[in-house]
Amino acid sequence: MGLCGVALVVTAGCKAPGAAAGDSAKPAAASAPVDEAAVRKAVAAADSEFAVAFNAGDAAKAASFYTDDAVSRPPNAEPQSGKAAIEQGLGGMFKGLGKVNDFKLEQKDLDVFADHAIEIGSYSFSFTPAGAKAAMKDHGSYVNYWKKQADGSWKIYRDAIVSSEPLPGQAPTPPTKKS
Image (cartoon, rainbow, N blue to C red; front, side, top):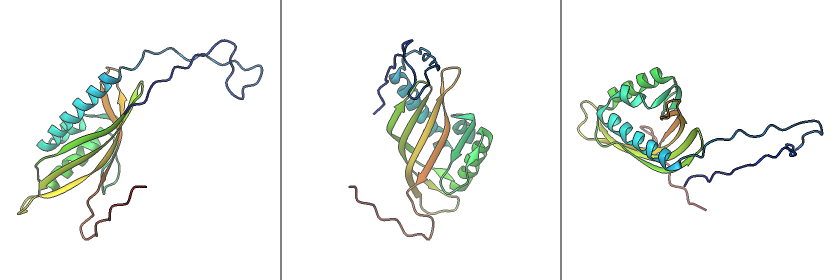
């Protein structure tokens, strides 16, 4: 699932491709190896805690998983820039959704790097808007770009959430055949 790290050794006599004879390449700074298992565990824990906050309709807790300068791209809405805007957007969404019944995330892939990770997954949930007689369902996919924070924690820096449910009045899109 993750990417394998590749170590690049730069020796004093090597030049970058296309470098002129007088150019000198700076050696790459040595960095500690990435503990991929620890990153996977941290992201999985954050996903689990986010699901709890989402099911509770807790916009402040759900927004706490984002960096202060995060940008979220929720389905069928304009991007939200900054943690405060994300919290406000989540609060409005929770108010419109009513009771969230069973929000779930399923991680499909996680590529781990030294200071960031890219997660691809799917989500599903049902919700019961105020006055509705039956629950409605939504499901789709997401991409989360996680960044390692100075304290070692991981937070979402960018996300994109894509609902697979058609907008009201729109016919469902038929599935495409995989080639």
